[in-house]
Image 1 (tube, rainbow, N blue to C red):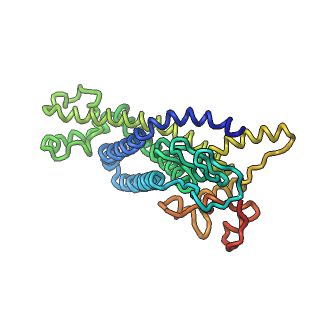
Image 2 (image 1 turned 45 degrees about the horizontal axis):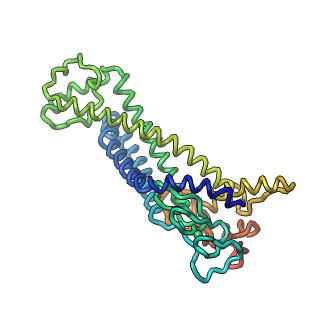
Image 3 (image 1 turned 90 degrees about the vertical axis):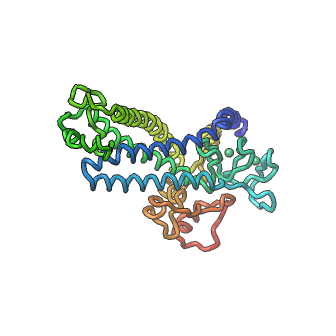
Length: 340
Ligand SMILES: [Zn+2]
Ligand SMILES: [Zn+2]
């Protein structure tokens, strides 16, 4: 009955996602490359002209976000979410997949796009063009977090630069005229002078500037910045909603699949006068520690803020029971935990 309720929804969503998956993967690579290009081509010279050390600091911050973004996307993309073994699986479960004809361990769900059972399946991700499950769930979530940080970072820097171009006092750019000879000589096309008001105003002495390619280049820079800002704004709103939504699920110890199943179970239990309890919910703090794999001496600073390949707590087939979770996380229980 639960499956009858959930699967039609997934079928509709999957049918759409299957056709756009490869396209979206290529789009992620192109959009992120374009963003990095704009950052170095337009934003870095702009801030470097204002304050050299500020520019170095921003470059450091931007590259930290970029490294984490690329790492988590690559790892999420290249790490299999995990599948139940075809033979020799001994799990305490009556649930058998009708398509794979193999037992389904707890939290496993069949993905109709991958046509495979996936361990602790969260969803089929079109942006990675495969499933998000037990072994790559953390990479997927951190990829969203660093995408969001990257969008906010570039939007803040970009809006400051665009504002200066559009509304700032033109006399603020008098430095430009001192550099005209350099530009004519082709020594410094752009970098320190790109903010010139001639994007819009041509009544100043340079309207007869002989090199029209210079103005065209500047206008092209401005248009590129506006185009990127628009794209980043749309992406950041969508990713913010998704990050908050998945954050809520992780806080409750649920996957996206389990959220739908549990929602149905809650209604069923309520009708019977009982209260539904999610056995994988250990309280939000512990749920986050389990999700991020922060145990055995691992820290937030080293294993979340910096790229890390560490594995999740359980093996995706058996799951630590609530009575053991604290002692397992604190590394005090060796080899005698209780599992589902
Ligand atoms: Zn299956
Ligand atoms: Zn899938």
